[in-house]
Every structure is written in C-alpha cells, then in structure tokens.
Length: 310
Ligand code: SF4
Image (tube, rainbow, N blue to C red):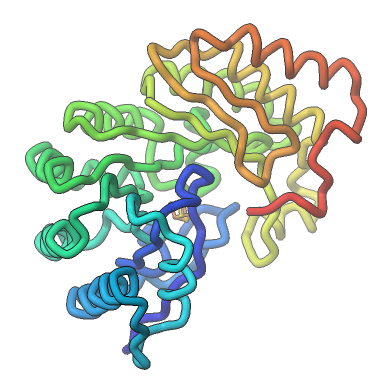
C-alpha cells in the first residue's frame, strides 16, 4: 500500500521547520478528543523517506524539481530556513528504531546544516525506548520531544483513552531529560468539562511540577466532529467550559505549578488568549495579565471563535 502523506499538524514553535513524514496517523488512536482518533498507523519505507531527502537537497541547492515528488515537498522546502526538521506524524517515535537511526544518519549526511530535529512522541513510545537508544538519538541531533500529558487527573486520563498513567508520563519525562533531550508537554484546558474542571487543574499542576519539563504548551479543548467526545457533547453528556472559564483554568495551573526553568505558553491557535513567559521568573507578570482579562470579562480581548484552530 502506498504511503498517504499526512496533513501538517505541528507545535506552534515548529513553524519554521521542514515537515518530514515518517509515519501517518497515531499508534495510540484511542484519545476521545483527538482528530487522530481511529486513525490507521502507516509506517513509511526508509527508501521513500530518503528519496524525499534527496529531492529536498536538490531543490534547496539547485531549485530543481523532480516530477515524481509531491508538490507539498516543494511548498514546504520553499519557505524553509534549512535549520530545523520536524518528523510527522502523531507519534513518529513509534518508527522502528533501526530504521529511525538510518533516517537520522542519512539526514545528517545529506543536510549537515540542520541544527535540530523534533518530533511528537507518546509517553508509551518513550518508555519503549531504552536509555541508550534515547541517548543515541540525541547524538544524532534529536533535540526535542513533544508529548501530550493533556491532564494530570488519573481518572480523566483513563476516561479519555490516553492509554497511559500520569506516573508513566513523569517517568517518560525523566528518561528524556536524562538523555539530554528537551521535553515539551501539552495540557488541554477544558478537558474535564465543567464538572471535572477543579480536579483537572489541580492534578495537572501537580503532575507538571513532578515532570518539571523544559516547555509547557497549554491548548484549549476544541470539539472535533467524529470523535467520541464530540458525540458526548451532542448527547449533552459533556459540558464544555466558556472561554473565560478556560482562562481561569490556565490561571490556576500557572499559579499552582512549580518549575525549575520552563517556558510556559498558550500560543497555540486553539487558545482564546496568548500568554507566555519563563517560569518561575515571569509568573507574576503572566498572572497579572490573566487577571486583568478575567476581571474585564470583555470578549473583545479574546481570540474570536472563527480564528481558533486545531
Ligand atoms: S496519543 Fe496524541 S496524537 Fe495519538 S490519539 Fe492520543 S492525543 Fe491524538
């Protein structure tokens, strides 16, 4: 079966990257809120990946386009600064290790100017790798893993089909940091709905403190048609937060987490308000900005619904 190139879904900070698909879909396709729910995992052939790398080299060096290469390759390569690569798709770390090593080696050989490589990785993918494998990936220029914690609430994690416990995410974070790889964690505002909000924020703050990641990205829940959570909402079994309630969650998570050195942001397009800063240094400034908006309750201060994205 030929490989279906996935749509580009990426962390906000990877906007300058070249997006290289290793897989399509997600191996843990059971999260009830996620657009990857029910997706079929596809593992791309190494030779196919190498052909794409060759095409990118030819294009960036000589502006030559090959007829058998997807137009997306050239659209992405055209605006690429040559420094960063992001592996697609939902959990590219699931890619079999010997093949992953081969892709990294080929990339480093053909594109030596690349400074850093990043990828999404589930905690399960990370725990499946031994410490030496993670250290080897670091040596091969793997700079950052983006992992979804989503919530620190153990019960909610189970309910949303994450397939992993919060303790396992903490363990995965430790392994990543020991390997010298940056760890970026996402949490989802509003994931517990109105009824689960309090537990969601306090447990999330607790687990974030235990992980002590280098980056935290807060997203705001967006109900995606076709997912079980969307259907629960249609049946009036899930009650989403209002935009200001989700900002209240953001405030409480920032207020109740403790970090050594973390860049915390809500820059993702799903959010109603973009807040960012280094924690702990910028905590007061971030909380003050949030409190001003929460006190004003003026919808004009928020990102309009039609401009929110996944
Ligand atoms: S593990 Fe991540 S990408 Fe996969 S279904 Fe869950 S939330 Fe989506």
